[in-house]
Image (cartoon, rainbow, N blue to C red; front, side):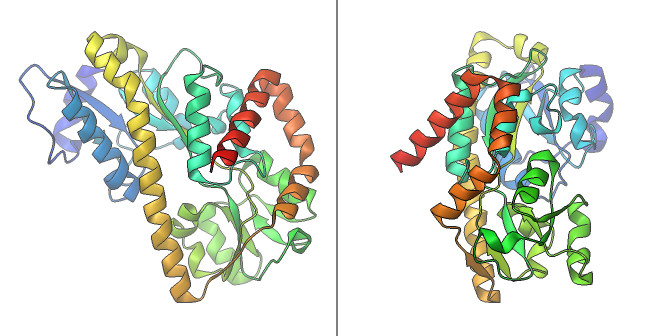
Length: 333
């Protein structure tokens, strides 16, 4: 791992301006990302978090972000990049590999996650309680979710009945089955193709959170959003177990406690961007239609078979804990 990094450092060393000065013996650790270097997730999340870890490490190690897929471009292979030691840290989407991470389908269930605060706090709590199965080939540093995936559409949708016949870009099994359950027409196309498809009239809208809506030009081709929560995307910040084992007890304690810092930074980052996106929408005349509690309950009923599938895959203890923590968080707000 160190030999590999020494070869590429001169060509791809990411900017670390503002990091605390390091001693000659400080170990450099890599944080891999397939996001472009100028993406806000890199500049406003990964790099500040790397700087925070470096400062807190007090000279034992530094963390450098290698963005733009420098250490591997395939989003589906990020766990392998970290587990094999190509990178010390990375961020993964466990739901891309349900055979390895069967519990993460919880967060994709319709009507459950209604905010980034709720999803991220529940995900982190379940991890800390040892309920989320993550395997032995990665050290989990933090777990979080996006905000809920909702419907961004060319035409206005007022209630759940308005989804019948609507052609929506979807991602994965749960979104596909959710759209089918209300007589919609799921379309499994790339998010990068969605704006042009909407312009051509072959697609009506997309399921996405507000961040994807903003990043992939969905805002330019849709005039309405319907806030039916159709699951969220759970993600993890992971570390190579050998890299973790090589740290001092103090260094390991820092990594063990870093998840709370990440969660706090993530929620602030996400909500800050959400405020900007919504403000921009108001200026354009974009209209947001709120899903009623009755419609959300109807969606959960229509997709109850998905809950049964996740229960079978994850087990009663996991699904019951998820429901309990989710409802408890909602009740506390």
